[in-house]
Amino acid sequence: MSRLKALVKEPLLHFLLIGVVLFVVFGLRQPTGNNDAANRILVNSGQIEQLSAQFKRTRQRPPTASELVGLIEGFVRDEVYYREARAMGLDQDDPVVRQRMRLKLEFLLEDLASQATPDDAQLTEFMQRHPDRFREDPRLSFTQVYLDPDKRHDLAVEAVTILARLNQGAPPETEGDRTLVGPEYKLVAPHQIARVFGKDFTQQIMDLEPGDWTGPLISGYGGHLVRVTAKQAGRFPNLSEIRKQVEQEYLIEQRRELKNAAYRKLREGYEIVIENAPLPASTSTGSYQSTE
Image (cartoon, rainbow, N blue to C red):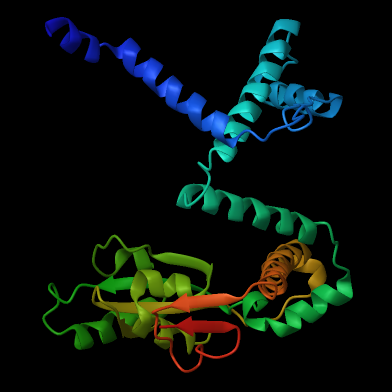
């Protein structure tokens, strides 16, 4: 009895039992008759060249003869395992396998869309359909002097005095209080200003024109005396200025539309049955069939 218990715990026995199970399953699924074609694995010259090219991209050199033999054997091993796993049904009801196969098909569809090179007329029409993507924001250049409300007895009154000195030519670095906020900004867009000073400050300063010092404008930090030094209006650029960006976004949209169109076409070949799943009125008709 003790020998039997020891044998049951032997890892080699577990391995042999797994082998027997796999052999039985493999035998059950084998069709009768000549199966040479189904069991034939062809490694052609194109695949060998691809294996060699992949090795060269990774190692920055071509493979040696022995390394190439190893690459080919690895390819064969992958193919053997892949075929045996499929034959045993290991790919069925596996969410990871399903997702990878879906992604692979989508990549193939994206490659098809990437083959087309849009002309200027197509890109111009695309820009006109999506003006907000390509319109350039207005930009400002300004200098600011910070007034700390915790250090000022009456910020509004003191601001008037400091403004007078600034407009008379006093250097801005000699006025105001210390802060981590930068003193000068060059041609920044509204979203960049808002990221530092907040939305309310941005709305106030975007209404100003280049000229004298003014303020105080209020932000989350406190008060700011500001002088706008340059202002650039927003504009819609010409295609020649941003062609690469427009083409990139055009191709992204084309790939998405192609995948959706291909899915809709493929879906037409299926009857969709949703069991025991009450659907909203907007989806319970058409291509869906619900069963109770």
